[in-house]
Amino acid sequence: MKTFRLKPIKKESKKMIRAHRDRDKATPQPKQWSNYPVPTTIKVYSYNHSVQFKSQSLKPCDLISQMGFTKLFLFLFLVSNPYQSYAAENVSVTFYYETLCPYCADFIVNHLAEIFQNGLISIVNLRMVPWGNAWLNSDGSFACQHGTDECLLNTIEACTITIYPNLNQHFTFIHCVERLTLQNKHSKWGDCFEMSKLGTEPINCYNSGYGNQIETKYAKETAHLNPPHRFVPWLVVNNKPLAEDYGNFMAYICKAYKGKSPEACRSIRYKTESIGNEKSIPQVCLAEQGRNSTY
Figure 1 (cartoon, rainbow, N blue to C red):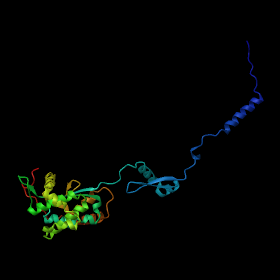
Figure 2: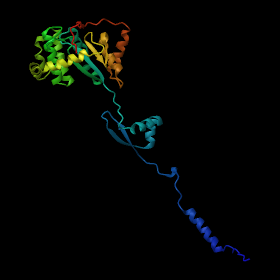
Figure 3: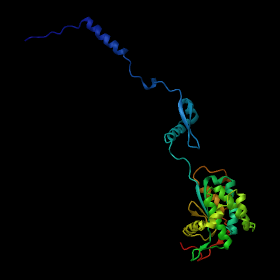
Figure 4: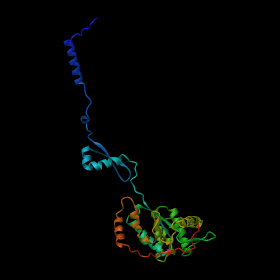
């Protein structure tokens, strides 16, 4: 049988092996995570009220020291969702009234106007509906609780709201008319166009009959209130009628708003809580039974 003899490894071969080992040691190894360079700055995007993002360069250590780990985590989470809406919805307030009811006029001039002064209007979507306790006759004409002058002014204010949808504009006009009502001077309502710096287009709206169409829509809306209105002033906040407690409407607005409340809400809450459970009987113009629209 033929046998094979293994030859001993030559010295040159051993040198070659050592050379391979040395070459392997000299081959760069993958860097560990800690060996990678740390970025010197991080782009930070801050949120502002106009839904824009402003960039600012901060060192990582500065970012952590300023915000802390918990706040930093929340910050990164919020920035990663830039399209999320952060603004709370305004509170919906609808005011049902009639122009010559003295209690409606008093509420508009001495109470509702206050939200324009204390800043509460910034969280409110206010709608004015001048129909109140009026009703429709069988021939389609209107009849109003305080006579033909009230039907006229209801329609004029409805036209003003439609032609000048800007709240500040039409509320200024309405406030002027209702102030004259409190002074028993409502026949001078035409002066309110000049005072409010509005044109006289609402008069054309009334004369053309378009005002009657607007009032018919308001009549239908008022007739479909649930629960039905029993009197005016009738105030609805976020679809909730305040009924006899309409005098505390600002407290209801502050409670309904889910965002950061204006400064005015602090004093309003305190004033409401100080009243306690005592409720005064409000002065109202009662709806006449059987006279309201049958929509």
